[in-house]
Image (cartoon, rainbow, N blue to C red):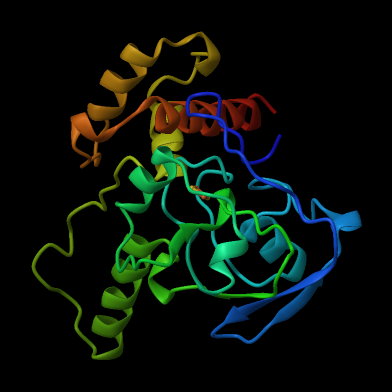
Length: 226
Ligand code: FES
């Protein structure tokens, strides 16, 4: 099921039973959620804010497929938070990694409104692949100013535990004949920390992240098998 993660406690939520409205800020895009149409997408808990965003194409990003293993889907529930399920410890642990969290912050993939009131959700600018965006903006700005070289310009980009695709590509390049599903997490953890460009703290991973990385690597492995 989208949004569920076998490595964390089960999320308890009450699905909506009647229609209600979700408005996303700053775009102002709004959708009347119809319980009959849930799930709208393939990521996050059915009926979650991420799921609804996919139905509306509201642009809420996700890096882990909506399984509570990153903080990319950070949202601020400006109105109607009381109609949403309680967050779990696992959700709040991931949220701690997001910049700019507020008392109304939640992970969109784990937050399911029960439909008893309309809700208003803000998608923070900074939740969109934060580090990559910053790199991009920085480099564009330098290009815009005609700067051709700057300290560190020839350094390869780095990536951390939440950059599942980068890690998956790195592992697939280095271990092309290895079926990811046969690799123990202890070995995978070691291999990841040895990848060129990996800059994450070895102590900052957990089973949920390793599971998401293994899935991303498996997809990459299957793609390369043709
Ligand atoms: S998309 Fe919600 S935690 Fe990764």
